[in-house]
Length: 174
Image 1 (cartoon, helix red, strand yellow):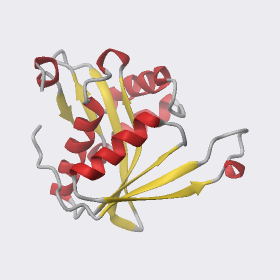
Image 2 (cartoon, rainbow, N blue to C red):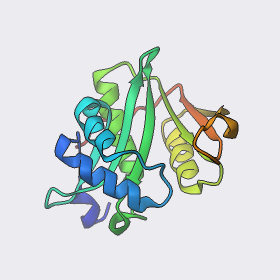
Image 3 (spheres, one colour):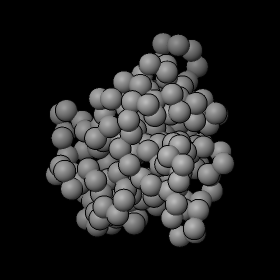
């Protein structure tokens, strides 16, 4: 881990982080951008199953949003992962994902991680397949939402990645 990475804290988000989450998502160029209001609510209502990476000055430089599925409380659905352009390429997304799942596993009986990825999003495909390999889990893939299910125009399909069972859960470090 570099000195710059060591200066980053993986933490629970606060409502005040919502605006920065929205900006980072908007500037990512790949995420479906939700309303600013939704990021504020997310930071309030799902802080326990989400993570923020903070620079030494306390500024949010990355985030992971997620929630425990009501019908499968051992499954963490990861909604979005984003890193500010100034901090990309340093393994921060993997560090946030590991930190988040370690925290959730310590508080809940976590067995599975799910996410959806649009075909061609190579960075997300690598992030989640490497996560599975680090944690001794297999990856199952299936189309969750087909192109024709999106009412707002052309949208690539969303492929569900189901990672589990998790056999080597990370230990909380931050």
